[in-house]
Length: 347
Image (cartoon, rainbow, N blue to C red; front, side, top):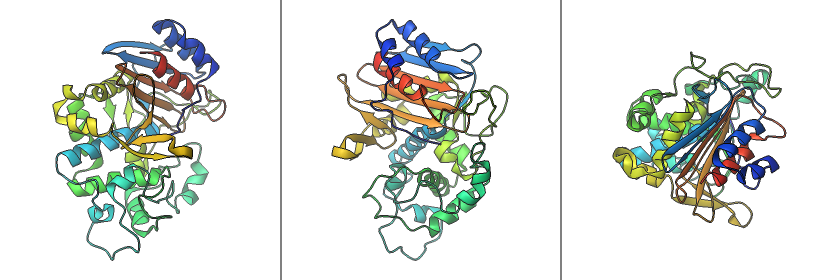
């Protein structure tokens, strides 16, 4: 799973597409991505346009790290409704009181904003994962092991002081939310996010069922097995159809249309930190944020062993873009910058 920031990476193909008509832009985007299945879906003020390779539009795709936007929205929903607070200790949520750590506690906010001080993955993850690194590295690392690893972990720096992207941290957040609400992860996500938004073709359960897209390795030919997520569900388990992805993004554009989630949808758009050289990168609770002439745009990427995804929206233009592809690009990645180009040319 990854959540790379595509800022400044718009390709020559994407730039050319920006100068054409909306339908031509999407057709050019689909053709720019060399993958067995490619879909680019755009909503502008609620009017949808979808372009896809044959048979791809109705499939359900693995989102990888773009799943974190659903987890962040879930946290915001639970905080807005008073079930918990952003600054609750994650360790306290997970079980009985333990001896205090030598540093400040890691909070739920630290986990979702990648400021917990935790590494990208648990220290004991790699030994079991390396033999399956290009297929299913997460499958053999269950929930109880994730929680144990967190409770033993020593942050590399004081929580809240530095940004470091961490699948470990967001995965722990999922277990903390489940423990705090005494609700299993899949049921909690369904009850608090998926059902209120009407996302009936979105799931965190199972993998490789009928209607799921089949991923491919970097060569675009070798099939990749369906993602088995183990204890990392909160960091990468969501699978969805392109139309459900647009529904999810449209809710972020018009929060008032989903009253149960309106407060949470506004909350995940607020900037919470800046990082990088000159503090150039802005982050909300869950999204990368980039300035445009039309106001801020928000986006997140994701990848699994055989698929990639891009989610983005710009409230100033009323535009939402979902892109998915069934190939894990490792070099000369045309997918992410092309999707990013569509977001800035679709409004």
